[in-house]
Image (cartoon, rainbow, N blue to C red):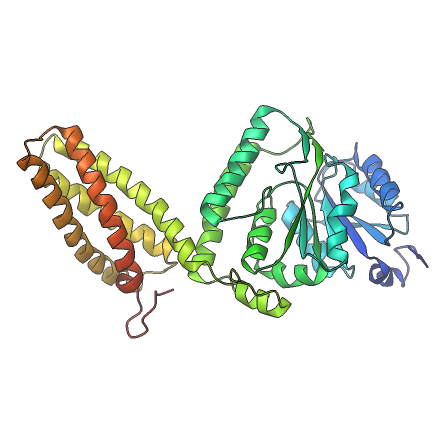
Length: 407
């Protein structure tokens, strides 16, 4: 960086304005590898045609990481930000929100991603062609060295995102991303997660706002010393997906406003509400159908088929209405809950009529085997599920006198 000043000087803040790139390296207890990694990144950045600043974001380390970071801070193109709490997302929010660089980058301290991918990562952002850029281990052209367990988890997670949030990007969690500063300022206030789900939430919100995401296939080598708790992270990610889906379905997240502010409006910007409702309704419906089948089998022993069908359908319908109220249509609080259940029960009566008629036709044909009953009733319930979605969207959860689903 030209006209460099030590970070302790009064002119230190002006240096960020001169930086085209700010590279953030979040760390937690990395005293062993931090110095070597920063040197590698610094040497590589020196070969690129842009000014830069490296920021070490210390996430409440308890070892000697802070000491190592302070030694590196003596360089004019390296600074340290200390956080009192852990969380990769929290660190990136803090640094990115206050940065004056044009393009903001983050990478994992283990440098699992080959640094040769940095230039193709940031070039489209500097030129204005794209808004975000991500390294991907799941596109043709990438070369990845990692065990089958991590490979399966990574691919499974990204398939889950495609199925639940209609994500079109290929790799949510590769620790090698970049974003234009103006885009970061617009999108970051909507991102709630402060930990590992931060990446996914940022990308989904950006995609829904019609922003352009550039993907770069990378060479990537798994770090055997990774501190990530896979099971806990997976559970947090599932909760994050559900929370994000609810926010998009209910309209609580104003991605359309972000698109308008950045001038990136597209067919997807602020839209997708019907699509998300269908996805969530389908998941709830699948769970309800399984619940209904299990209840029917349990009740079929002590009760006749028609009584078992009535009780199983009633119980699963009450649960289905409650789940769709919260998850699919984003209705919270107790207000209106009784009315919603009553209207749901009217829809239940229609479902009861369809399933009872199906059961009657089956028995009239001489079929009384419980397996056949379950199959016929399950198919009938799938038909009823479609009718239930239409009724819920157009009637059950519609605010009286407004003509649209309540929120």
